[in-house]
Length: 257
Image (cartoon, rainbow, N blue to C red; front, top):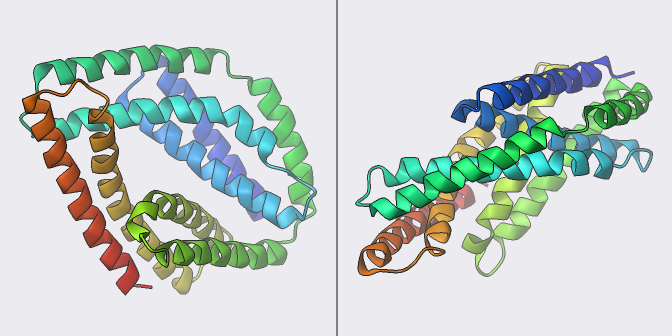
């Protein structure tokens, strides 16, 4: 039995319960962010367990129950980041007001999602998951972890070989987020300097990807608002920043392969 894997999953689940409570009762920006980060880690781990179980476990039921929370928290998180980035720009007041109104609406929706979240169903799914994990040896988990990371990295390399790799940075980011979670699990199971260095490198790239992603998503969001001479100039400026960060980041990733 891979007790390490059980412990790691339990750790993430405890964080999930904590952040759901904090988000429900405090609704602070950091609570919502941590809720989404934890769900993202859980999703990556569930993908690995499904991969390692060789068809015994399918992650779809778990992923389905988490999806509404993940989506709602992500929408709020993006809107909050939009406002922060726009604080340093010459932003029309109606834009910030619209974004703030959207946050309030989405927070109400997230609260409803949390109130009606089926924790009993999650418990049932977890009980089945633990039975699957009990049949996994630590050595098999480590072996599958390695091949899973290699598969994700191979997919990143294939995306970067496309004719227009810049257009695939969002997908690259998703794959590397999974890799970071799985490498962290590997370190939880067995200490390794090589894994530590690999994880640090992935985290550094993910930080840069996150900064680019924030500007790129903001540029896309601004396109949904009414265009005036002032908003058009702002959109152009934001998109230019996103493109510049993205092109620079792409060179960094390609040079470090």
